[in-house]
Image (cartoon, rainbow, N blue to C red; front, side, top):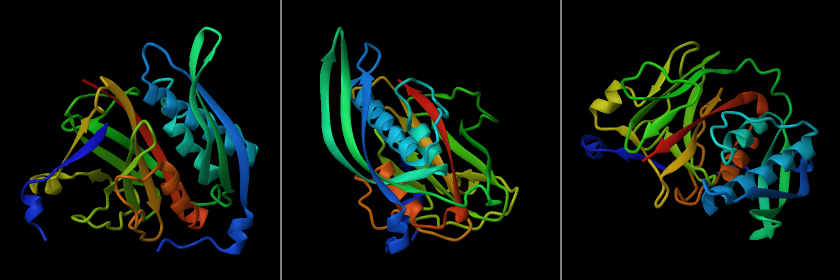
Amino acid sequence: MKIVFVLFALLLCPAMVHADRKSQQNIKPIVVEGEAVLSEDSTPAQARALAFNNARRSAIEQASGVIVHGSSVVYNFQLISDLVASATRGVIVKEEILQDEIRKEGKQIVYYVKLKAHVKALEGREKSPLKLVNTNVVRYGSPSSSTTIVFQENDEIQVHAKTSIDSYIHVFSITHDGMVSKLYPNEYFKGERISAGSEFVFPDERQRSMGLKLRVRTPKNISRAVETILFVATKEKNDFLSNKNSDEVTITDLMQELSEHDASLWVEKAVGYEIRK
């Protein structure tokens, strides 16, 4: 799936900081494995994504000593939100693929991966007063969504959020295989400081009147997919992923950039949803 920016009149409108030596000492290299059964209701791409995210989750659990439970899981192949939720304990800043294959185990066909993950532990997050609340992804014109969010192909959506203190909100779209697109801020709309308790809406009515709309679409040759909107709130103004090729950004790239900032200065929350043709 890709969230598509629909732009009309809007088109007429006009370094990464490297971690210091101390931060490097907090990075643990861990070799982990992940598997996912390739069933009738899942594609190889979905099984591969699940296997990778199972391995990533295992790496963070081993590094932090904390079990990472599911978050916003809509299908058993959707664990992006698990990976994002685990950022409260640690993030994978680099990974090396050691094995990546489909194999047969008894009567089952499974996708198997083996990774060497470099995990950075995060400290000081529990003490931060910065919180994201009332995060939501809704069909445009709908006041709210249910626990399980389902959209149809080409539906227009809006995202909503509030924060506990004055902050900047960033919005990212994450596909089922962990690829990331930055939705907001962008080249047309720069990030503005949001007051505590104020509702952030993207796109808002002003942005929509200028031609900006978000529409959901399933990936090619897939009739349904589960994706994630990732909200990140920061106390300071930042420009994440500014030096990345937009077609090659992964969840690991984003988590790496976030990990280079003081953990008390940012907070994240993920909302998963399904798209059907």
